[in-house]
Length: 434
Image (tube, rainbow, N blue to C red):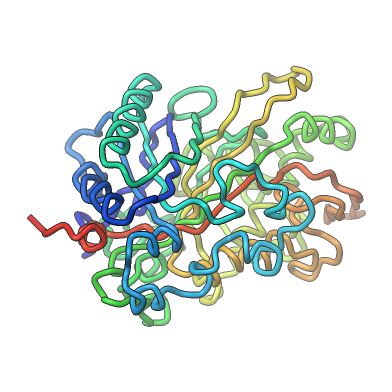
């Protein structure tokens, strides 16, 4: 069994708290920053089981420049993989397939991700907006008292339409399909036909699906830690709705489902081809118990649909090497149905967890999401999250081609973070174990 007391809590489970804040810091003094980190060890939420859910949670992650600023020895720094050392901005074009408006030169100036000016991320979650505000204030005071770091950005996010709505701005239920780790104690939540994955696919220092172990130096630095990919993704909701109305041929909901691969409720086209099915969507296990083996041509769920690209469900052992744990919440105000464009920025704050950024997150983005030739297609990047300008092929008799797709999602910023275990947090801050 995994030592859940040594793993940061959001790695094994989503908190399902409707309010979140992401505070970003730059270290200005190594010893003082280590003192701040030492003070964060106890407040960090672990993956231990709860007798009763807390009203708030806190988690910490560090960038490679942040580890350098903390004074980590060269031998330890060099043991991190190249993807993490180089960071997202340096790898955006070649390794993520980010082009045009997604490139770092177009990112928001704050937080300063493009210049690698972020050293740490503090993630706060709460059941209540007032509680979150109190926690943000308290942790800002804590940082100010410690000295040695300055806040360089803050992002707030909140669930749309209620505490457990779990919808994103385009109107689809989100966070449905998540891997379950073997040894986590959560194996019973794995959907039928989808066995738990080996913990090393997400946790360093443990065997992965090929019985290999990713380790850092010293081993305690990496064990029970993981990597988090932070991405702020802006969603053009007015453009999305206009497109559905213009191209939906009287049924914009069906077109939306074909683009996504699921209906707004979360019911997959693979199981509910002709109409949304909220009863199916409410059953967590059965809603994920499907594949595309009997729909190879894409007549039910188009081969280029977003969820089919992000998780092809081929049953191949190699596919289990490219899984992601997804966390995050929408940011920005919800645009009411039928409302005109209000000009507000809205989208998703996404945090994607993996043991290998290159093999998991970067591969999915480059080879599945942004690739125009995915699954034998020709000029078909992801119709929801792709760069726009391509074609969406609606397989059928006859087929339909939707050419010149608008861009609906734009990257506003992001970075690669190391999520240390509790042991590693103590190691990094020179704090003795109790």
